[in-house]
Image (cartoon, rainbow, N blue to C red; front, side, top):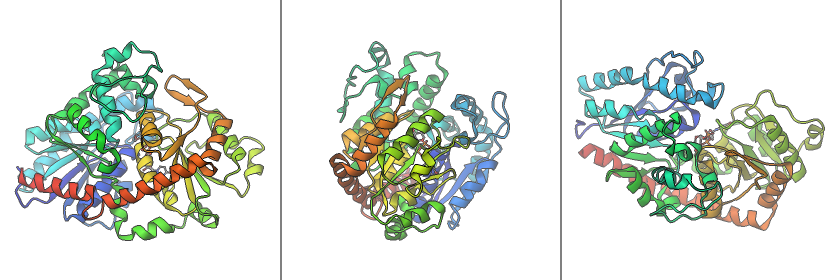
Length: 473
Ligand code: UDX
């Protein structure tokens, strides 16, 4: 279908910040390679996307209306607006209603003789495969997660009946996989563990989109070869029908390429958090704390973090999503001048690349992991949901670029921590020998990550090959 001279790609992100951002970065990477991009999104997501891709005249937005359906709060077009993650499934079902307007956009492109080279859509939008097949356009699924976590999830899915019979902390042996750590059921995403229960709707959904992945032209992964090289063959064998996994990441680094030096050594945006970081004189002295965009952290756990940070004695910059939570009595006085708590969206990449930032207490969402690695900052891992425990094990046990907060209790899949665990974890990462070793590893990985997206680097070359192959198919 695409003509050899086609240089146009359609990108369709899922409406969740952690899913959308890397695809916007991919759009920028494609525009650096002289590819025009049309991003499909819904009206209330369009503004923030437009701001992110401003200065890129080759990237256009096409809005399609988000449906109103029963069971979903009106006007909710992004998972960040969901009252709780219990609404995720109705949201995913509502997104399926985008099929017709999506097909109309593609049809118009085809009729006007400008068919796209391919559609790159989030794996949650698996239904877009059927549209692409009908209209003869190759579909690539996008996964904003790591290769290893996806390979483990897929293999566990296949072996669910055997895993079912194990207790929570029995080691799991996955045939055909060489894991760099001991895997237990407690590390697996909840929907994977439930996968032998075919009545679980989320597991069913994950099964369906997994099948769509396998029938797609390929899968794009926001990772880089050197980080997860050993796991790519098992990933491809579990997910694909002889198709390929394209590791193009870290995608956000393409955007920084021109002023990489500047963005690594000094802050560009004058915000409260970067100004505060500028005032911290000692390099690598601040622990940055953030738990991403989705995980719900209870007020009592936020209290434990507050006490733990206070007890650790280290300077900290903490982004808190909860608007209602406030510091426990007495803590405010004690941390004056030593800690900054921000309750608004920050530029996390800027913070991580600031010379004062020396550690990251993180939930280990894949974007945060990649951003930390790319900035050479070691992670203090406190995984909370989804595949985050697998990411944490990769970074701590597999790559040696982090340490873990001691779990106090596993409540279902939610790992709870205490103030002592936070305080000891921060001290170890920021001032202990283990932390020094982890920083060295993180810095080395950061150098490799930045090389991967430069001309001749593994991700850069893979992106060029991908465009080349699409032009020839
Ligand atoms: C979700 C899933 O929970 C996770 O398991 C999966 O790996 C990715 O999607 P999320 O909570 O969105 O994770 O965290 P993360 O993957 O770390 O993504 C958050 C993104 O938002 C990062 O790119 C981070 O830099 C950005 N962010 C977040 C900011 O820039 N500023 C903020 O204030 C908060």
